[in-house]
Length: 191
Image (cartoon, rainbow, N blue to C red; front, side, top):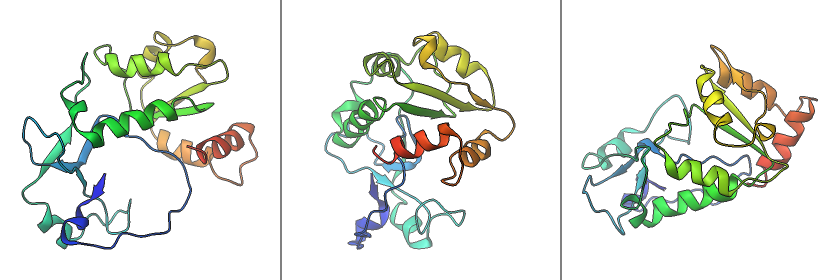
């Protein structure tokens, strides 16, 4: 997505730091667009914190530049063809397909609703015997739903509880010596 600051000719940081791959398929409240039903060719902006993901939130300047935009949220549905008319949305889904081919994939906060046929297709289409999928969620229900979608031997132990994000972050520390953390850092750095 295009940072909303680019609307006024902002210079974007040139040096990309390799960390991990993140794909938000159903968009988020930080993705902004005109709100039109048909938005083919339209730039989708991302309203983020002043330096990426920070607790400070977006700058006053970026908030002012985005007053005429509304959040783009793609609901889980049986078909996303109308949304796929936009190049940025298509690109995110293509990146997801490639990312799902990794040997280790984390789904954070996703419920795997039965109505989301496109995600179900991507999961099944990208399946390979070495892949492990780990659900990170407060509830065990998404893990159980995933077991209905893919072979059980490709589903790893879920990270469930009151603080699943914090637990995931602790597992992924580079200094961690668990094989899972080493695999995650190796694979996610290639996404």
